[in-house]
Length: 115
Length: 113
Image (cartoon, rainbow over all chains, first blue to last red; front, side, top):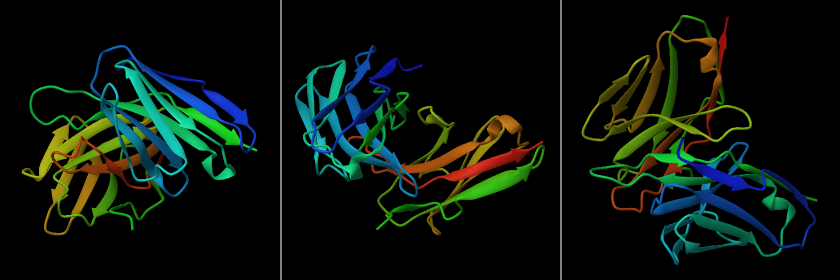
C-alpha cells in the first residue's frame, strides 16, 4: 500500500464546468503522475510532477492543468470540462531510492462523467 | 503512434495451464519494462519488471522474458489461477525521463476453472 488516496472517487459534471481532482500521498515521494484510462488506449500520461511547484506535460495534456503546492498533494484541474474528458483518472507515485526504480504505484482512481 | 502495443485484447486459459501475454514496442530507447495487473474498479498494481540488460526475470509464478532484437516482451503465468483473471498492461520507460511510463492498451486475461 503506497498510501495514495484520490478524491472524489466518482463525479458527474456538466460540459463547461471546472473540475478539480485531488491526489494525496502520505509517504513524501517526489514524483507524482496523473493518467487517464480509456478503452483501447491503456493508461495515458496527462501531467507529472517532480517536486513542489515542478510540473511538466505528458502525452495528453491539452485541456488539463496541474498544481503541486505541497509534497503530499497533486491536483488535476479541467478548466472547462468536455465530454471527451469522460474517463477514469489515476494518480500514481514513483518510489525513489537507490538504483533504478521506475515502478509506479497507483491510487484507486476517479471515475469522471461529463454530460 | 503507439510505442507499446498489446495486440491481443483478450486471452482465455484453463486453470492450471500457462498464460502467455505478449507486448511489442517500437522505441529502441526503452530500457526498462514493467507489467501491471488491474482488477475492475481498482488502480493498476505493479507485478514484475525487467531491465534491458537482462532477458528474463522470475517472481514466483510470474516470469517476464525480453527479446531486445525483436523488441518483444512476454509475461508467463504458471500455473494460471482464477484469481489471475484481470487486465494486464505492459509499460516501458527510458532512463532519465522522470520515470515516465508508456503503457500498452492492455489484455484481458480470463482463467477458466
